[in-house]
Image (cartoon, rainbow, N blue to C red; front, side):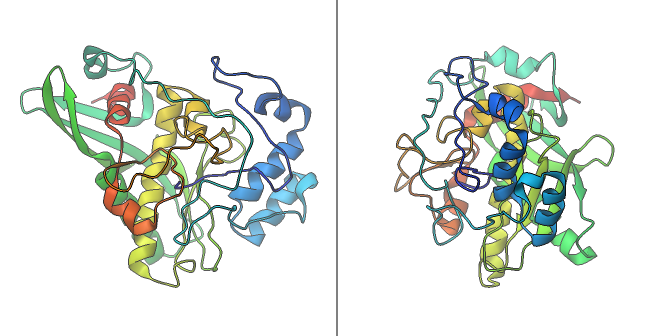
Length: 320
């Protein structure tokens, strides 16, 4: 819906579920990475690359792909730049119907192995939980104003789409989520601007076995929106908030759950026959895909992080 590397097509490979122990693991991504690493790199980078410069650099590292990048959005992207990707015959996993599998006491106490990217402060008296998502923005390709605008939009998006009320121990807690810049321990996120008319995708594989290959990158696409600043900013807020959520899902549930958008796509981000139909009204889940995809403005107005995901975020956050 909001990202990602969606790699069906490109090099013409398909990959099904491999990390989730409840899913079939034959012919999976890990086996493909071991047996044909350059081919996998090509497929992933086809969708992640957003400029000819990057494509050339990646081509140098992965000769299989040199000169063969397809940076066009996948079939199925709607007019406003949201996409679940073309078509796929790969099965998807069904998201668990049991919520987080965590008790309220566990959520409030926190994980024994928390993520260094997220911090939580819980005030049980006032029923307020303050969460910080720590970021280390990398802005080498941007000037000062561009960097400031992108960081502000992403920070606003995280606050808008991740903050929500959550029920814990029978009481309502106000959960306020914000971004803090941490140059030492923050999540490394490259920021880039794409002025072209084609939509350049964002990606975040942080915390997964693909981290060294792709990492995290958020792209601002004013050209795609014909320099409609309001629309481009809404898109950036949604995309930025979505990308901040992937490492949380990897940490709290697993790589496949994150890459598969909670069971609403296959592991490479393509919609399938099992992707839920876009509801005409009501809240949209920030970390899920829908078919058809919502328009940018509709998504901006209706999207929130799911309550279970906010509970997961609280649970895996370091206590402060």
